[in-house]
Length: 134
Image (tube, rainbow, N blue to C red; front, side, top):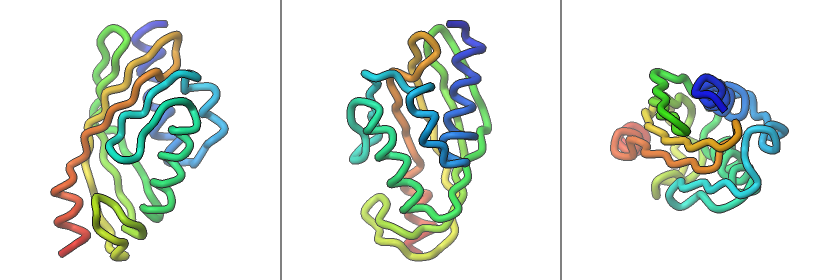
């Protein structure tokens, strides 16, 4: 698949799957053998992605992601994105506080045939913890 297709699927991951809570997209945009490498949350297979999204929706009320930058090369897309929401569940070891926060993350997504096969994310944990735990 083309770089443009991969970029569009990456956009859909955040704008439709995460923001609009479209679990029905998993079978379309995530490969059966995909790996979610999110620390402490990830796993293998489509079910890992469903669980990761469900955890996020339960942990961050009104979660919305905004893509700031999207860079693609070959079968990989790097996404710099912002998450906005209310901290309701345990995240990064901090129990829910009810505080609104904005967090930034960088994700590296690898594609095969227009589907995600590997998802890795590096969130600004310290920045988020400072906002919700202060």
